Length: 218
Image (cartoon, rainbow, N blue to C red; front, side, top):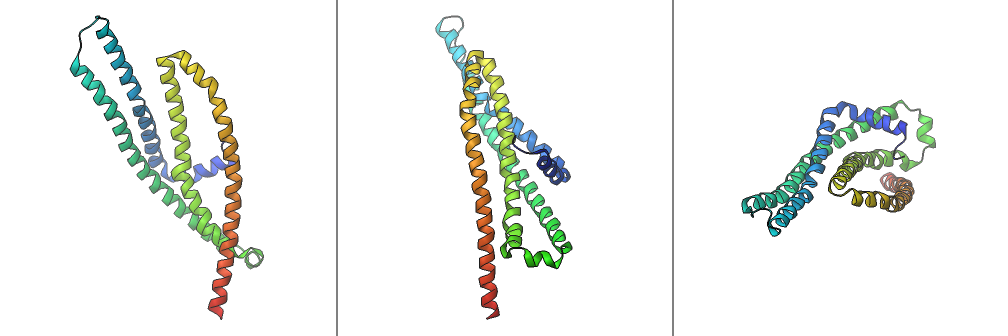
């Protein structure tokens, strides 16, 4: 399970005001994934055409070969252009969501009692405002889009492999868990390390805050 249902609901609540932009991001990712799969199809067409020419079944068609070779270049080029637009939209949405979360946190802090600020660790609040929320923006701009891109790319590649050779597709799907399981384990380790890093960063922020306050008071 990549995300819990409660986490998905919170993510959707933050992205709901920007449904139109995220729909465009989804469309750009889907089209880009399909365009990246065009070169193998063009290569297959070139090989089939050359095979027919070599066997004498048809005469050579040089303009058709040039068109296929041009498609190998144009497809990935258009995919990269879409990727630029997708990153622009994703970055804009992530910055807006980050600003929304900062405002909600600011309003929430004003509703807290004075006792919370007495018992809380000095750097916890500052680290949450400065570091944790910025991490949320990076998740929206990179992690979620990367997951979406990988899912669409996986299903599109699986369909292409079945179209080209179902035996090769079956072999690839059988070997896939041997690559996915170690990646999942490394992801769990990375998650723990990130939490430890956030805790240490909060502690460091508190130390710097205390040092700065001490110097200002002296």
